[in-house]
Amino acid sequence: MRALISEAAGVKGRVKAPPSKSYTHRAFVISGLADGSSRIIEPLLSDDTFVTLNAMKAFGAEVERQKNEVLIRGTSGKLSSPRLIDCRNSGTSLRLLTGVSALDSEVTLTGDTSLQSRPIQPLLDALAQLGVNSETLQAGGRPPVRVYGKEGRINNGRIRIKGDMSSQFISSLLIISPYVEEDVIIEITTPLKSQPYIDITLEMMKSYGAVVENINYREFIVHSSRYKGREFKIEGDYSSASYFIALAAMSRGKVEVGNLISDSLQGDKRILSIVEEMGAKVEIRKNMIAVEGRELSAIEVDLGDTPDLLPTVAILAAVARGKSIIRNVEHARYKESDRIRACSTELRRFGCRVVERRDGLEIEGKEKPRGASVKSYSDHRMVMALSILGLVSSGETVIDDVESVAISYPEFFDDLKELVGDRIELSEV
Image 1 (cartoon, helix red, strand yellow):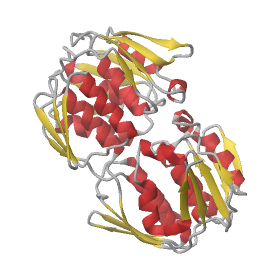
Image 2 (cartoon, helix red, strand yellow):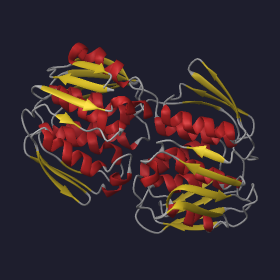
Image 3 (cartoon, one colour):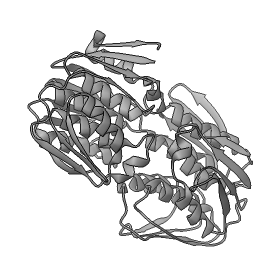
Image 4 (tube, helix red, strand yellow):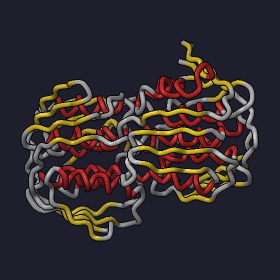
């Protein structure tokens, strides 16, 4: 699928943020492990989250979909071996389900070519400290991965793991730890990146009845217990909302984004302070954020805790006055694409001056970027960010392979068209 995009100035309107992908993944996994039944209200139903939901069903959870809800009868930690799980392009699914597999017997997890390029060895090394054997089926500690689970009989309880690779490794270990026969101590040996995602994991574990101690994000103590099924409503997703927030700021329009709670633990809520610092006006209402665009100024920003904001902040920098510096986000190189390299390459096609650093970017903003034919890298966040940049650039912008938005936001282009109308045309290639 190809998107043809033309300029839209002063965009105004209202859109509803989709449900949070991070919360939905965790809700499906924890509900699938729990005693009793859970009702997940307004989950995100996307390519990525369906991978996790279908996998938990393969592990033995009973799943029933209703309108705007998913009912899950949990396994009480007693899993049925699915043998093979195809995680497709979902890195979150791969990492969380690798942990779940340690509670089963022999499980092989695979995915598409992109997923097979993403590292998994640190998580396997951590599971080995619990006595769980595993192996990767290609060189370099990358998927496919085979886990020889302990069938719910894990009895070792101390893990040491670095905190600067992926918070999902740590979330995976945290989520399964209540089902270890002894209390689990997880020691973080380097500074923790993406801390807000750990906060989400801890919040959800506790809401399902787990007992977890957090000692300054350097040590987590998880007491042996069981999750209890419950009703859980999924909040709106700040990561997906960031593109509409950026559109308002960049087009000097005004956009209201609903379904966003002001006290969310989501790290990507930081997009509000970023656009405000750059010059936009932000108004926070009950379950609604209103952003009004003005002339934007460059920013220096550390995205160590919010790597998914990199494409959004990069396009904001592309139209801001002055040179913006984005740093401490090397872990964004290990997403669906190498997002540092992808942003650097594609922003140059719009005529921007970009310097690529190991852990970030330096971007010299242009008052009016020029439209371009750009690559999406089959990366949903690159598609969404480049679409917004195309809407504030002169001439036409063409983006190929835009169907990857289904990974996290299947209705993205429908919602965007509600704001910009015929400025976006989709066609089969």
